[in-house]
Image (cartoon, rainbow, N blue to C red):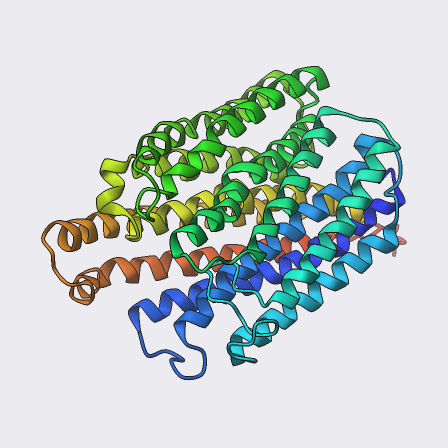
Length: 458
């Protein structure tokens, strides 16, 4: 570790992985409710579990991004983080806000209160006081990292990372605007949800992945930066107007059907470029880096993101197809693989790379780490196929034949059982990953060989 302030990332990664554990356990519980509907129905109803599952996902990914920024910026900018104290204050605000959200959701505190109670907008249900805290934390973070970069060396990685982080914070401000018109509400709501995950988050992803390729492959910085600019240009070109594929059925003008179809189809391009970038860098570098687990997660991230966000997104993005599939389990299949491939795997890749350095050790428990990758990737891939088949059957029975929703859900029970099984495999993989990261490998000390003594002759 070259810079002392990189240790900030250790705390962020630790809190992020704790929330990751909560998120996957919440997802497993939600999957169980699909097949055993009365499970904890009074103590912890499904809508609460789903809110905790999705919100903990978003928060732990953001903490991972923040930790990654605090880890890589000192090396890229060639100077310490501007203020480590501000970084820890920022984390404290986010942790308090997260605890407030969990308590509010779980016990339905302050029901209907405009400031303290939860809002009914999916993914941004947080009470307004929590949102205000998030904004304060974001401002602290942006000031801290921007001052670090402005006073140090500027690189393509730091420039793109800052652009993505500033965009992330500014777009979140739309969560405070809640118009009474539902169509208008949804239009601005997608500014956050879509332009985060299919816009500025892609910039953050590309910059962190570029940093990992630089460190793991040894390819020249100029080559990495050229690829990075191409990927970012493609992501912004397709992602901004690609928001239109969410505008098909919310009351917006009909021209969005064509704009959304055309530009969201092009959203496959940056993810294909990212996958090609990762494999080409490994091929060009031919460097035998000791951290094989981080390299596996990096390549897995690029590959699964292409299939989850790119291919599975394209499957139902054209308005003629989306008319039938919108809101079915096909959407769930796309969402799960896209998030896992693009952002979960990215965070686990940078954590796998950074944690041994932060702890001052050589990469350890790599085999266990790589086993966790295959368990999580395999479980999520199987879950995606299962939900895709379930969504296809659901589309035909419900949207074409007109069978009522609950009757169709009964027909999908076998798929939901398989989804629960794959979720269980994923949780095992997540537990193994956390163990591999935090528990050092035990050194095996070979027993000393007995020393032969001369036996005196009798």
